[in-house]
Image (cartoon, rainbow, N blue to C red):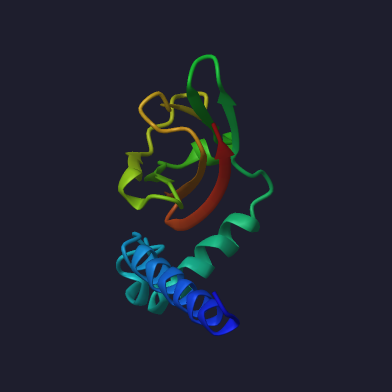
Length: 146
């Protein structure tokens, strides 16, 4: 085999490898952060106001993860319990949006809410907490890995 055939062989192998990678990567799923991304972007000023309200509070929301009990405990300070708490807790899975879970905010008399994680897959989760207390809107995020 002379050097001309070697060049043709290498060039052909490169083209085949490039085309196979293109077809492989075109078949991969690409999840967007959210399906209604543009709508959320327009409404983000409300979100900024909620985050500012939460950061202005003296006591942040605490959380604890128990791997033995497979639970996440959200701990609201006593100052929140003076008003009626309403809101949603969104367990957001960045790697797969189909696994997201949304729970209603239902704190007990001591300001705690237990959420079972046994049905959730292992990995990184963002806990997005939207709540209303005393007529004011708040938003906070926690990151947990289990």
